Amino acid sequence: MKKRILAALAGIAALAGAPSVARAGDADASAVAVASGNVYVGGSTFATGDLRSSVIGRFNPAAGAFDWLERVEGAAGAADGITDVVSAGGYVYGIGYGNGGLVVSKIDPSTGTLQRSCGAGGVTVNGLAASILPGRAAALGNDLVVVGGTLALPTRGVIAIVDGSDCTVRTSAMIGAADPQSSVGFTTVTIDATGHPVAAGFSGSDAALFRFAPDLTPMQTRTFDLGGLLGEAFTGLAAGPDGGVAVALAGTTLTGQCFTLPALSAAPACGAGGRRTLSFGSGTGAPVGSVALARMASGGWLVAGSQLGWAAPAGFLARAALAAVAPTALAADTTVFAPLGAQVLNPFPYLPSGFAAVTANADGITGTGTAGYPGSRRPFLFTSRPDGSQAAVTPLDGFESAPAAPVEPAPPADPPPADQPVAAPPPAVPPRPALATARWGRLAKRPDASGGFGAVSLRCARACTAAGTYTAKVRGHTVRVGTASSRLAAGDAVRLRLALSPSGRKRLGHSRRLAVTVRFRVTGARQERALFQTAVRLTARASRQR
Image (tube, rainbow, N blue to C red; front, side, top):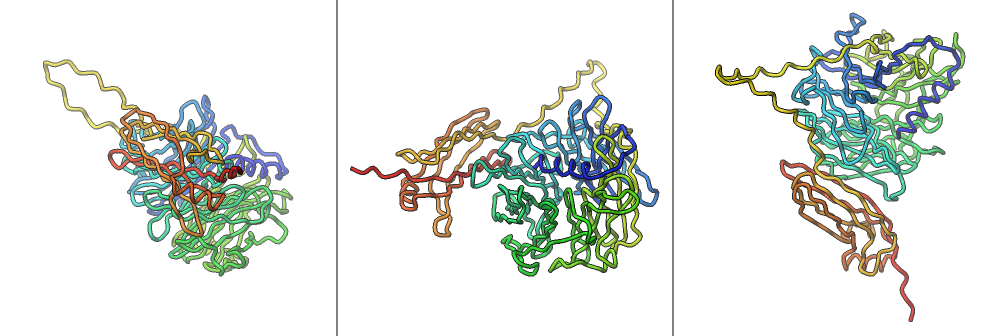
C-alpha cells in the first residue's frame, strides 16, 4: 500500500511540466474534518533538525487564516505525519505515523492545547505487534477506529479501536489473505448504520471490503476485480443506511463500486458487477493519483482527486478535481457543480495539484490537498456551498513555521508539609506494551501423520488466555477442523503446535484440499483483547500403496 501511494505521488510530479518556486517547508495537507462549523486540517512539513513533523490547525474560512496552527511531535528526530483528523467526544484527534507506531494526539478544539489525558505530552505512540503505516480513521461514539497496514512484506491489514479517554489501543486485529504469500492492506474505514466498522483496501491483487463486529471479530469479506493490470485498491469509502460506495483508480480508470450492507455484495443498480466508470467531467483528461470519497447531505456521493489534462496557461498538467454522483446509480449529479456535475480546478496554474481528503455536510463542501513538486509542495483548502457554487481555493501557509503545540498544564500538587522536604516527582510512566504478540512458524502445505502443519509462538505482557480455532469451508458451511489453547502468566511465552483434530484429518482426507483459516483470540484482564489470524491451503498426503 505504501509503495502504491508513493508511486501515485511520483506519477503526478512526473506528468506535470513546469518548474515551481522552491519552498523550504515542503508541506502537505492530508486530512480535513469539519465540526461545529470549524475546519480542522492535518498534514506534515519538513522541519529543521527533523525529517518530517506533524502539523494540525483550525482554519477560519471567513478570516482566510488559521485560528491556531501548531506542530505535534509524534516521533522526535524521525519522520512523523498526520493521516487523518477526527472529531469525537468534544475533542479533535490527530491520527498519524511515527517510528512504526500508531500516533494519537488529543486536542482542545478551542485553544489547540494538547490534553494530558492522552499522555504527559498530550501524545500517545501505540506499539502494535508489528510496525505499521496507519491510514484513515472514523469516530465510534467517543472512541476511534483506525485502519492501516503492516510495513513488512507480505503486508497485513490492521484495524484498531483507540480509547478516546486516554488514546491507547483497546483492541486490535491483523488480517491476512487466504494465500499467506499475498498482501492485505486497509486504506480507509467507515461506520455502517448498525455501528459496525467497514474497511476498504486490497487483498492480493484485487480491491477489497471488510466488515467487522464492534469487538473487531471479522465478519464479511469481499474482493472485487476492477480490471487493473498492476493491482487495485479502494482508497475512498462511504456508507449510507443500507449500502455504500467505494472508489478506486486502476490505471486511468476511476471506478465506483456500489455494495449492499451487511453482505458487502455488489449492488446491481450501479451496473454490471455493481460498478460504474466515473469521471471528472472532462472528455480529454484522465484521472491520476489517488481518490477520496464523501457522502453529501443529499444522499449523493462526492469524489475528489486529480485530473491529468490540457488547459491554459500551463498546458498538460494534473489538476485537483471534484465530481458529484447520484445516490443509487452513480450517474453524474448535475445539481452540484452545474452544468456537468464535476469541476476541474486550476488554483496554481503552473503547479500540479490534487485532493487528499474531502468532506461534505448541509453547510457546504470542504476539501484539502497539495500542489507543487516533492521538495517544494504547498497545501491548499477548497470550500464551497453544498451545490458547488461560491467555490474558493485558499493556499495554506505557515506549516513550516508552526510553533510546538502547547500542553495542558498539570493539575497543582498538594503542598508538602511545612517540616518535610519536597519529594522528587515520580518517573514518567512508560508506555503500556501490547497485550500479546504472535509469530507464525513455517506452515506446511501437507500435514504430517498426526495432522501437524506448523506452530505459533505467543508471548503475553500481562496474564492472558489464548484460544485458537482452525476452520474451513466445506460445501458452503464453515466447520471446525482443529483447536488449541493455553493460559500464560505475565511475561510468559509459549509455542503451540498447529494440528488438525481427528475429524479435521478425516475431512482433509475426504476433500483432499482444504483452505484453513487459523485464528487465535487472546484475552486479558480489563477486557483487553488481541486477534491473530493467518491462512494456509492444506493438501492431503498421497495414500501409500502396498
